[in-house]
Structure formats: structure tokens, C-alpha cells
Image (cartoon, rainbow, N blue to C red; front, side, top):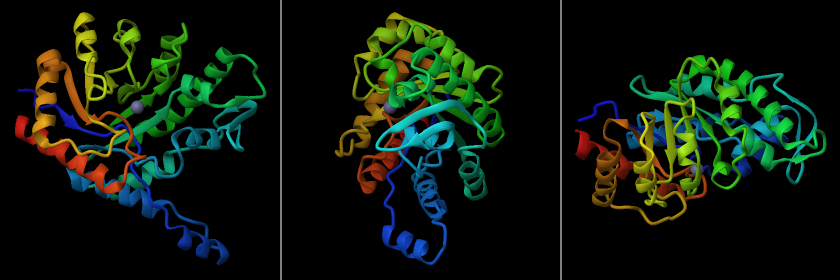
Length: 298
Ligand SMILES: [Zn+2]
């Protein structure tokens, strides 16, 4: 039995904005606060029994959180790069500080970074006109953000959803650049079918790889063909479907994960962020995930 297995999330949680209150506050000269939404996301994940909790990526869709915060970027209809990318003030520090002030003592905090490749592929670039140069500029800025937030978190997850489709030859160098010298635990999350890159990413300088094993169960076989010592965060429930997986189905899935990864199975999570699901479905999925873990590990 591996007692170190923890339940966690990938990042985002559904957010239902009270737009009437925000407009009311705005007309009264009160800056809208995201804290009630962060508190709701944190409380929901915590109440569901999740061990390692994020801030819910409440403030913005995940690309915009960083594109809005970096110098050299701006948000129009899409995120745009209009000058040298740099970090001049912390982006997620305030939200994580707030999380640390409200989180129950027995819970841990997951910090989230959107990876430099995904950022460089998601923005409209009017400045660098060189994808690699842009990606490394993002990596440098993300490294500065990481230095600021690592004292606040138990683990940092660098999320590179695009790697399953766009995998540059400098992918490992990019991730290494961001994480060089990091002192907390690290994870890399990549969405989709990562079959074609598994042989590469098992050597990445992270503690844990996180993938959508529920939507792409063929990954079990692919990882079996490329054994390594890297830890695994097992996607156990779909984040792209409303249907709530019964506990028995999740147990079967985790047992398969144990069979393939043995003590390298470190985390149990949804396949991806839950932002697009109705909240009651997201919450039920987290509760069932925790129930399944408790039935297996006690
Ligand atoms: Zn994902």
C-alpha cells in the first residue's frame, strides 16, 4: 500500500460570477473582489475531501491570468504580445496568499503556472516574430513568478496542454529553464493523447507527470513501454463530460493505475481542469474520486 497517494486537482474550478453585485460595486466605486469566488472554489475542493488544492484559477481563463499580468502583453480579443515579455509584479501571489489564509490546516496548496510553450502558441505575437525567442521570454518571466510563489505552495504544476499537439525540439530546455533551482515539488500536466512524446517527457526534470488517463486509457500501455522512475498523477474522471463516474468505476481505474505504476502512482485527480463543467457535476466528480481513493487506500 502506498500511503503517500494524494487527491488533487489539475487547476480550474467552475466559477459562477455574481455580475449584478460586481456592476453594483463598480457603480459605487468599489473594486470587485475575487476573494469570495476563490473562497468558494477552495471550500468546495476542501469539503469534497481533496488533499492538494488550487486557487481554482478563478480570476480568468488560464492563458489570460498570465497574459494579463506580464509586462509586454495585453488582452484584446486575444492575448497579444506587444513588447519585451517580463514579470514586473507578482501575478498569482495575492490569490495564493489568500488561499493560505483560509485553507484548513490539513490541506496543501497547489500553485499553477501555464507553460511557456502554451503561452507562446496562444498569443498573437507583434513583437518577437520568433516562436522560440518568445517561448524563452515567457519561460524567463514564469521563472520569476515561480521564485515569488514557491514559498506559498506545497507543489507547483506547470501546465502545457499544447505539448500533445505542438512539441518543439526545445521543450525540455524550456521546462528546465522555468523550474531550474525550484525547491518545492513539481508536476507537469499535459492534456490529450501524449503517446508520441511519452518517451521524451519521462526524462523531464519534474517529480510528477499528469495526464488524461480516463479519456485516453491507451496511455497505460504507452507508459508501460517506457518505464521510468517519474511519479504519476492519474486522471481518474473526465473533465469534458458531465456524466458523473460512479465510485466503483473510479476504483477499477485506480486499480489499473496501481497495477501499471505501483509506487510511482502519487496523485489521483480529474483528467483536466473542471472550469467548463456545471459546478454540481464537478463537485460530485471530486467527491466520488475521494470516496474511491478512501475505499482503496483507507
Ligand atoms: Zn489538461
